[in-house]
Length: 116
Image 1 (cartoon, rainbow, N blue to C red):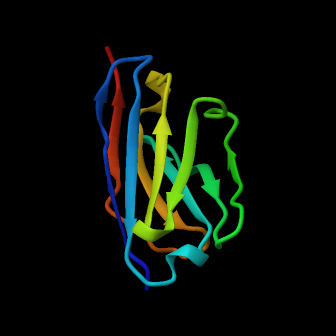
Image 2: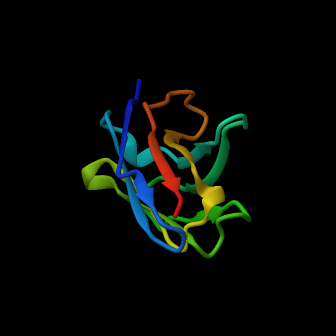
C-alpha cells in the first residue's frame, strides 16, 4: 500500500506563499493520479487540486476556491507531489493532505495557517 508524508506547512501572512511537498512510498507512484486535500476545523475534507499520473503529458485541475493561486506538480523520479500556494488567504487555513486518488491512504497532513 502506498504511504504519504507531507511537509512544508507553517504560519504565513495573508498574501504570502508556501510550497507543500508529499513524498510517496511505493514503486508505482508514477501511475497514480494524485490529489491535495484540505480539512479546516469543523469542515469536511475537500479536494483542492489533482494531477493525472503516467509518463505522458499530465493534466491538473483545481477547486474554484484556489484556481489561479495554487499549482500542483509532480516529480515521478522523486516520488513527490508538490503544491505551490500563492496569494494565501485566511480561509486557506487547514490541515493539508496528499493522497493517490481513490486509494483511501492518508498521511499525517501538514498544518497551514494564514493569519496576520
